[in-house]
Length: 66
Image 1 (cartoon, rainbow, N blue to C red):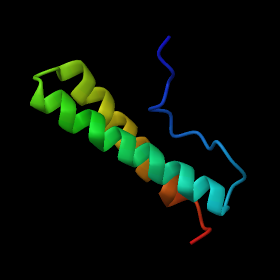
Image 2: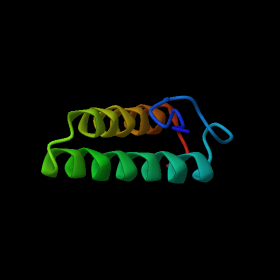
Image 3: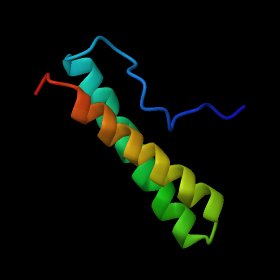
């Protein structure tokens, strides 16, 4: 089952280090999926990675912990 990892919804308390760390992980995972999708010519994986990366960026913009 595929989880909706491209959601910009907070997963931890707002303005917390845990939320910032989680959003950073989401961005990293998305960037990796995007790069791998590009390398193996899998547009679906590439697009999902891009959405996930953008969702992580959005979560970081909303978070004031750092």
